[in-house]
Image 1: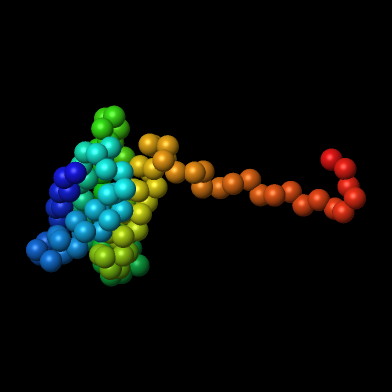
Image 2 (image 1 turned 135 degrees about the vertical axis):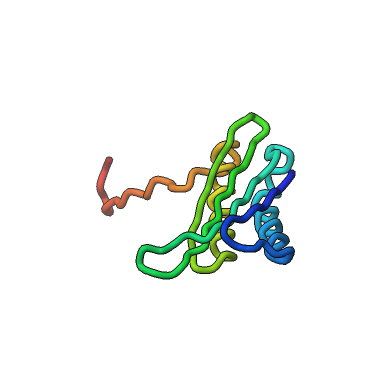
Length: 116
């Protein structure tokens, strides 16, 4: 699996590139060869309330040709990468049918002695 990391608006250091690759690989490694590659794009986005947020957009290409996308914003780039990688892993699992449904039906409460 190839992992490409690019940035817009700030300098991408070798350490940051390695950290992004490690986090993406940790979340996507369980899918093996079913995922051909992941592209990570890091950017700084202006916050309307003032300040700067860090944004991470991930795009995964599956062997079936399907392209999945996930995005997260946070004040810290590491947190944004972790959240978007976790979200992308959920999307890939659903697309590959590897995961159980996220929400099981809640058990119905029965009263003692009631017949349904």
